[in-house]
Length: 73
Image 1: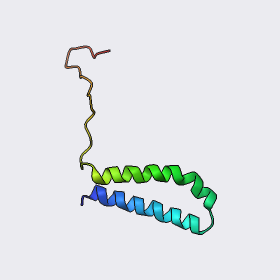
Image 2: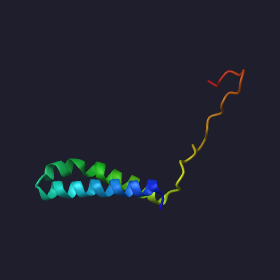
Image 3: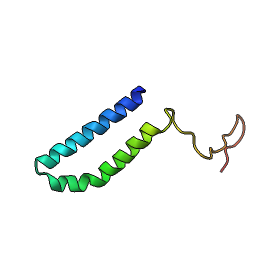
């Protein structure tokens, strides 16, 4: 497992642990406001863990100007 994935899992575990502690301490209102963010966090972590290790290339990269040419508008 790459170090990026290890950090990703560590962050996920930390956030979920903190959320559990907040709920146990009776901060249900705080948890209710955080649920959408936590759902997105879990989705992104799953994507990071199951996707390729390298950064993704853009689907349609814009053409770049070479020396002496004007960039496209």
